Amino acid sequence: MQSTSQIQNLQGERLDFAFHGSTKLGTLVILGHGLTGNKDRPLLVAVAEGLAAKGWPCLRISFSGNGDSEGEFGESTITKEIGDLCAVLATVPQEKRIAYIGHSMGAAVGVLTAPRRMDIQALVSLAGMTHTAEFVEREFGDVVPGKGCMWDNEDCPLSDAYVEDLKSIGDTLGAASQINQPWLLIHGTADDVVPLKDSRDAFDAANCRKELLEIPDAGHVFDEESYARIVEAVDVFLDRSFG
Image (cartoon, rainbow, N blue to C red):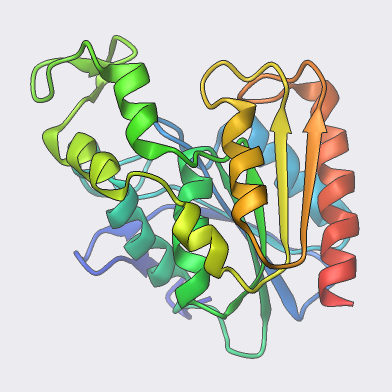
């Protein structure tokens, strides 16, 4: 990490993060949250703590405009968060092997970043969003951008920038087909926010070494029972990927 213990994106906004030290000093696992989330969501905390207990140093980040990171939530888009992730990657010493774990929209960030950034050497998607245009229409099609909010949360205004960005991306299938890193996809069968089909479609599009774990009855943010399964699966995946 930077000696100043501070990370800024290209806009000069400070990104909040939390580091979990552990024994495998040559590696770093970066974890990114989903829409309206932050680094302190229970899923990210549980996975980071579980992986750190197994030897994997972890870094949980809040994308700009979220949590205690600087920036405006209304400016948060997948495209901007790709820039945030690249800013984080730039602080990691070149000799470290990096894995990125993204949840939901944070997973889409990872899929779109991985083909252009080979310093990400292993990729994990948790309930990953694949069909971005379908998502924004399905979840917010009846909300007026610039006036309404996401899921009636006044702290999360729906912006024109967000809607246009997800529509412009359309889906992440093209990027998925270009990923060369080993890729683990994990999705709950009871997810009512991002359908299981999103992970299945991404898995089918991928040409890399890939694995898909479907967790029966787990929802979009998973639960305490499934956290242990996720940690175990990721631990095995990272061991196989990094040797």
